[in-house]
Image (cartoon, rainbow, N blue to C red; front, side, top):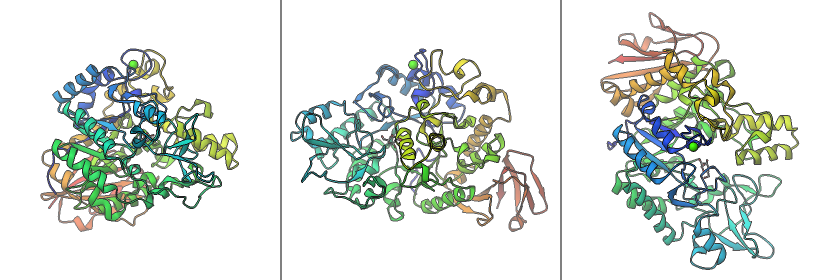
Length: 559
Ligand code: GLC
Ligand code: CA
């Protein structure tokens, strides 16, 4: 594989609204991020992805952009953004912005002009249609519920939105639109961005002409993930974007790509891939149902292991996945992948080591490094997230009581990871001096950064150790380029793997169960073993390594 500047980096995602509020209006902002750059540096971060800060009416928390060239005043000014880029550069941190170009906001001037004249120049930037014989062009269901077609008021036209109705889809088939997007991307990259996290990108290629697909609920509609199986030819757009933007800027693009097909992976993230990397969402989609959240199954630790190893095999000698346990769309990883008995400091470190040391780029989502947990919501009125409202309605629709429905929503609501960052144990967790836009998780008194700074055994300090390990010049090649080889893959409740290096191998072995477990290392009998990291005392007698409940051990094995 070709060597690139980003391959040995550790990345961090900031959800700006909830990271750090510098001016007391209850909303996190860019000056707040600048304030915390040294903290990020202390975690060894080399790439910083910032969720959208562009001008937005916030129907979907900034993922509905009304002006791609301006910073929303709630987050600061363009000068703040330029200062952030400069300050990050001083610390050898590259900034990624979110590239949201499957859709824009219905308040974008393109869409305003388009609605005024759906058959004119700007109408071609979107998808407009009229009913034929009383029927809409297709029966697709938007991700946030309801049909993808929305009437343009005062006309007989409809426009397409696969997300919220305030997020009209952009028409990538139109070369003029693509040029506008490339111009915007170049403009930002010329300001010194390191690249983009590319949002919802798999949706830009629709299966055309529009037609119905088999309905999967009693609303007569079909889930978008099914619809997209019928689309082909996205490579024309993504290849163009790579050649025009990614390559000339030597940038880092990480794609939000779901359900990529095995044979496509080389196209998406190989040496000449459309993206530098794509997220590994195999464990995210595991157990998810097109019926809705209520029908989902939560993955067990063995499911989690199977997903990780499957992806590691797919990526072998192809490229770099970006590895995550959570993000702003998912529940907290520790509240989801760990069995309830393991949701403590020790278990959090286990999950951290297991995912962080896999081949690929580790991404840390804000607060993950503290072991921040899901929030508990008593009723739907407490929830902000648009997708949660649609899912709650679906629960009620299939006959659940409000109590049952809120339980389901609690498990998955995107607000879980959007609660403010827990900096310390002062009011509002030190996030703001005002009223936070979303309530702080009351567990901030125990789980906060200030406290974990003082505690050598905290989750935060464990993340710092993982980060140091991965950046250790002697181990770097093994962690960045070494193959992943599962070890004792069939052992239930155990997740163990090697990273195979030139000079040495690293063994990561963890126990996801409540009982002690023994691991036989007789195949490594002759070899020298050195302890690199663990979340407990390590007991090794002869060839037997005993793992206490939720223990993880990282060993260096000299060849
Ligand atoms: C992506 C974002 C999500 C957003 C959606 C629509 O999935 O991560 O937050 O709602 O795209 O832009
Ligand atoms: Ca603010």
